[in-house]
Length: 249
Ligand SMILES: C[S@@+](CC[C@H](N)C(=O)[O-])C[C@H]1O[C@@H](n2cnc3c(N)ncnc32)[C@H](O)[C@@H]1O
Image 1 (cartoon, rainbow, N blue to C red):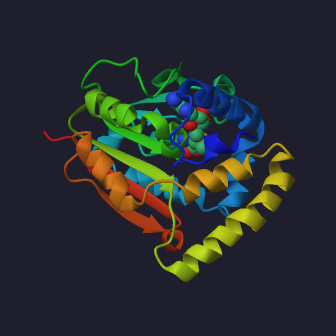
Image 2 (image 1 turned 90 degrees about the vertical axis):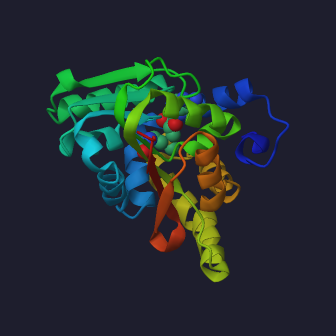
Image 3 (image 1 turned 30 degrees about the horizontal axis):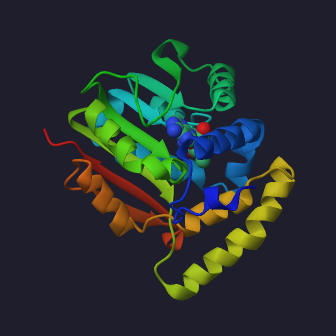
C-alpha cells in the first residue's frame, strides 16, 4: 500500500501512478466487491442506491449514466426505476465483467444496457447526451482530477438533466465522528477480511474517507463546475451523503 495515494490531502502525487494503483485495486477486489459492500454497509447500501436514483426525479426514466459504476448496482436500481437506457461506465475491466455477469444472471433487458471502459476524466460521450447521471462511492477515487470529472458530467448532461452522487462522508458531531472513525478502523477491516480476504483495501477506504471534502466543500466544487443549486442529504448519522442537483435548462 502506498499511503500517499490514500491521503487526499497529499498534493505531491503522480496522478497516473495513483490511477494505476486505484484501477488495480478495484480490478483485484471485483469478485468480492458486492459482498464486501453489503456487509460493510450493514445491508443499507441498496436503500441508499434507490434513494440516489429517486433524486434524479423524472429524469430517472430517461437515458442514465452510472459513472465509475463498478459492478453496476446504481445502474441496476436505475433499470428497476424504469430508465430507458443505462450506461455502465468504469475504468476497471474486472468490475465491468462482474457487472455484465450480474445483469445477465438477473435477466435484465441487456439490450438497453451498455458497458463501457474508460476514465471519468474524459468521457467518450457527446455534449448534452444524458437525462441523468449517478455515481456511487467514486468521487474519492478520482479526487486528484475531480474538477475535470465534474465538468465532464456537466458537459454530457442535457440542460435540465439531473445528477445524484452517493458518497461516504463524516458525521459533523465530534462524538459521532470519533465513533465513525473507530468503526472504520476496527469493524470494517474485520468485515473486509471475512468477506473479501486479506486483500481488502480498508486502509485506503478509511483514509480516503477521512481526508475527503466536507459536503459544503463538495457543493462548492459542484458550483465551480456549473451546477449552481446543488444540495445534499445525509444518512447514517452523517456517514453517508447524497449530493444532487441539475444542469440549468
Ligand atoms: C468504490 S467503487 C464504486 C463502484 C460503484 N459505483 C458502487 O456504487 O458501488 C469505485 C469505482 O470507481 C472506479 N474508478 C476509479 N477511477 C476511475 C476513473 N478515472 N474513471 C472511471 N472509473 C473509475 C473504480 O474502478 C471503481 O469501480
